[in-house]
Length: 373
Image (cartoon, one colour):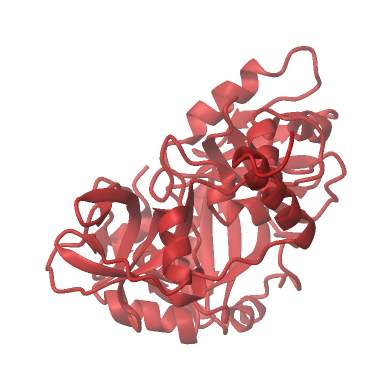
């Protein structure tokens, strides 16, 4: 469904997509998102609903997040994992008015709803894909709340708060992007009213920006995109989703054994980090391009962007063994051909719970046969 906002001046569509990558000013749009308020058309995201009396306990049993007591007016994230613990779907959830709403990556909704429908059994739930009827807009920037107020819309006070919109839909405050100062509020609106709702926000002080601006600030904030910054081997422990989309103390769900084992007794095979590239090439590396150390493949890049302040940066899954060497000062040259790559120093320090660290040390000792089993 092609967005009507693609008809606005300067719009350049995402390759093969239905929304604007930018409106003719990619880097200025990023700056406005970081410093003021921009409106990003994300109407290509798939939207689903799960009504029904059993919805929360049912979703709790299937997804990685603690959901059976999710309060009305609350949002969270969750994952669908394979039996081996690999990430299959990421979904942003919003509980409001007796219905659980979800939005996920463009094109991923049909497969997610099909899987959910197969898991219904005799429970009172009715998962459905409603993308044709609903569309997502996102306000980004430190002045976003001013825009909402000027437009006469509710302003969620805290991250993960959801407020209903007059005429249908909701406003959801998500975690900030960029350096942490770019506030984010997602607005779910009737698709038939997409252009009118956007015009009201633009009249209230926002400016249009493409999804590239949102993506760039998301990279800075280490916000992975499923299927781009993850691959078929990705487990939650390798990404920030372990903090935002996984509840480590809830009961059984598919893939939990892998998540718990890696968290409590081992280290993830890879970790998501921010890479700085030398930026000498005209074309940016595609998602899936190998990260090399000499001739050895030690990771893969995901989203790579030209950032308005940081230059060429990208998210990458890099082997934990390599990151541990870098953290101790060992020289390891990395390349994302043909560029030289450097891991951001903020991503080399790993905070570890003392009890978990002690358990991991015991496992290492057992494996090295330095203590008895």
